[in-house]
Image (cartoon, rainbow over all chains, first blue to last red; front, side):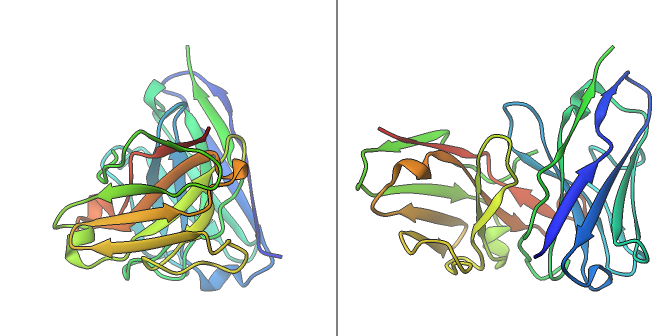
Length: 121
Length: 112
């Protein structure tokens, strides 16, 4: 059974850091690109980060570029998101998700249940 | 930032048919990228509903169907069921590397 489980969320002050993890199981993790997608309270879905299957190619939207870093440990079947200089507007449920490719119009499936990050003073 | 535009809400009685539109532009849907649809319920992982414009994953009822034309796409739910009450999002890719994947603004479906 393909499964993604996020952890590491919590309450943090603006300007501080947090690292999220996503544990994968039920598939060959090292063969797939992985992604982070977030959903702020009452808002829609927003793509946050992408990493290639071998971890050498990374993509970010302008909203997090320079502050967030996506990485992976294929020996541990785990995806990470290091979030620095957090802002109130980063408050959201963060989901990890898998695709079969990066640049050919792929879809996200499956998704993890999410971990909540709340940035507040 | 949502780049694809959806109506905020649609509603229908059980058994009726509802459609959700998803409007993009020349850098995403109009560039030839496929459109995918997800169902989102509070506290749960988003679920893939339609991929590649009009394909259903195993286990998704055939009352869900998708289509795409030019710079827009649509999701249709036929024979609306109470369990279909949820938020629905379209998604595509974009030619901009800073907007690699784009989502719709989301549509709340209410079963009357």
